[in-house]
Amino acid sequence: MKLDKNFIQQITLAENIGVLTGAGISADSGLSTFRGKDGIWNNLPVEKVATLAGFLEDPELVWKFYDMRRIEMSKSKPNEAHSALAELENYFNVSIITQNIDGFHQLAGSKNIIELHGNIWEMRCMECGKIIENREAPLSKIPPESDCKCLYRPNVVWFGEALPQKALDQSLKVASESDIFFVIWTSAVVQPAASIPIVAKRANAYLVEINLEDTPLTGFANLTFRGKAVEILPKLIKEI
Ligand code: BJW
Image 1 (spheres, protein in one colour):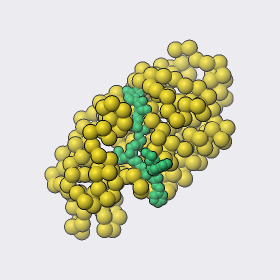
Image 2 (spheres, protein in one colour):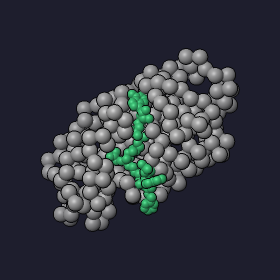
Image 3 (cartoon, helix red, strand yellow):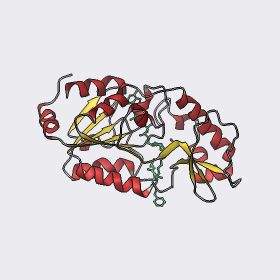
Image 4 (cartoon, helix red, strand yellow):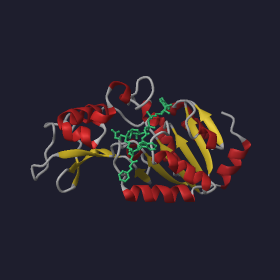
């Protein structure tokens, strides 16, 4: 891989690196992405499985959907792209802002991780809001019940729901302080996550997009790499 001269100059001077990741980074671990030919939303109606209204209408259906994904995730593991990002922390202050709920960045050893859309291994009581960690896969009871016999929901962010304020504030801080900001393997169509790289660019970060295809952010990027998760990132980190 031949690196662009300007990129080499930017990375040589960089201290703070921000990264926004999407479902594509876990695709090579065998997890489905959401959009595109084999995407989850191609086979399942979003409004039934990824909205609060859908959950309230049929909690069992939604929990079966998340149980299936928990089983898939428990059988999968982070890939070389997750590991390469973890390795980057040996050289720079790296903050990973992820839209993914699989917890793979943590498993790969990254330290500074901001989860924008929650975590599939957490459940939240619908009554008191208490969050617990639960790694049972498959679940022994669907839908799961909290200690107070109330319904648990997955602690993830569905459409129409606000993102956790702390995670959003931290992400905007990272974006505004990054010297280089990588947007990797997200279709960049879901807001407000997709606007974070724009905040970084406006704050003078050098914006690097890595994806298989163009996204709405491609036009804003200073540099674009095209390729699959396991192919590009480990090579790139090696060059750096
Ligand atoms: C590979 C690869 C390989 C493949 N290697 N790469 C109009 C305008 C603006 C906003 C809106 C609007 N209408 C509605 C909205 C708001 C809405 C939104 O953005 N909708 C758009 C879709 C239009 N946003 C929201 O509702 C958000 N909340 C909000 O706005 O709240 C406002 C509010 C404020 C105050 C009070 C109340 C409300 C919430 C969004 C939540 C998104 N949730 C999900 C599900 C999470 C839980 C779960 O996982 O089940 O998050 S949806 C899904 O999309 C998931 C993802 O994190 C997110 C982004 O997807 P991602 O990661 O980009 O995946 P893909 O599949 O889209 O892309 C994969 C990429 O990988 C592709 O680019 C491929 O090329 C690539 N790839 N294979 C490398 N092998």
